[in-house]
Image 1 (tube, one colour):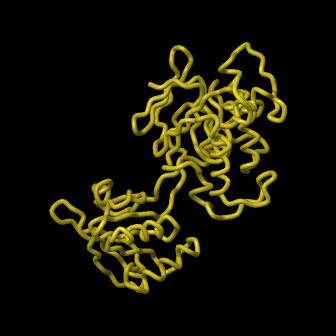
Image 2 (cartoon, rainbow, N blue to C red):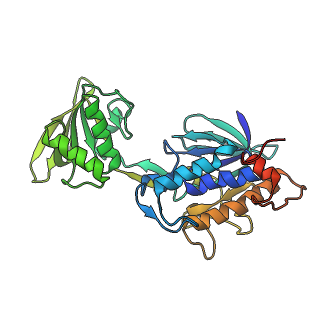
Length: 342
């Protein structure tokens, strides 16, 4: 079990900035997120869309914002645990919290900051009888590793960047790929759309406007996907692997069972420190609620600053907490790596 000062649950923009604010106060942090990469909603929902209300930044995309935040927190060397969900939070006799994730990671921390946004993002799964038995063997809800399906027959379902980029990658691996969506319209970056168009014209990538309705099994394997075409006709598509990238849906998940005060599936906090109803556990960003709450990244940044001071009070009881400014503090300059160490 790995000990640390603080655990940040959520690697969206507010969770990442929380690492920065904790780092300024000398607090070490581990970050846990259910997604396979940092970014939260910024990456999953508007990676390439413009954001105009980040202070001193006229415009940036969600992807650019996350890249800048990761660069900003780099001096504090936070350890990331991605692709896993926090399932267990237990108070220990010494007052610390034991955290256990869905993949068995165990951490021991003095304080927890929940920055889970609107919840952990879970893939939208197919609702077809019998298909769940093939998840992890022939059915996948994330893009595969390079060369995982080289020369195999693969169906990719989806209409966004993730689905189209996955299909393109598989074609480059010499897989026989069929891209499927309910209609011949896509939501992806223009260069991606153009590459898909070219491969379709060259018959290197097949497309079908249809929706899945059932499966065919043979010898314990998933052999074909039954679909209903847009024109109402049906078809059976042979396959060796099925990759479903139809988006993510947020779920509050196990947080709802941790005994924290909730209001409309959001965590109630004290705005002096953004502490929840359980001492030592804080909540920042879209996951919390209080009078006057506004769901803006800017507001989440403010909450992260105050939560860091609240966490410091828990970690260093009885010690004075001096407000230092990054403009003038030699200690902060050393912490940020912009001045020589002692």
